Length: 103
Image 1 (tube, rainbow, N blue to C red):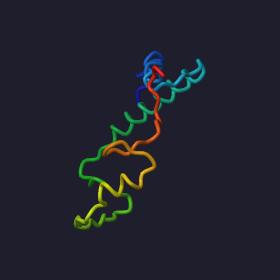
Image 2: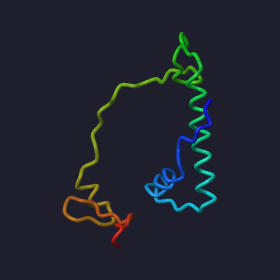
Image 3: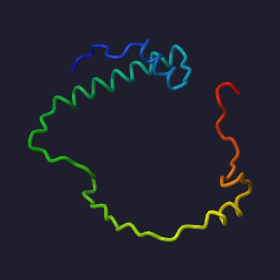
Image 4: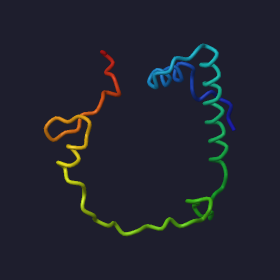
């Protein structure tokens, strides 16, 4: 297992910026070390010989029962609009939950 640093602090800083996270210098150092440890561990796992080992999809070896789709009559659009708190023409109006960056 190589201890060569795979991710630099600058790269972690870029990832944090893209994620809209602000990290202190200590957090930046800590997260860089954590990411490199994870990647080193992945390298160790990649060295394991998995030839002839069946792929594991579910640790409980359960099957997911699927049912046939059943089509049912939907609610009438006019009834839905009539029951909504606010509407405009054929649309239900909802409060703004996300603000644009310029707001």
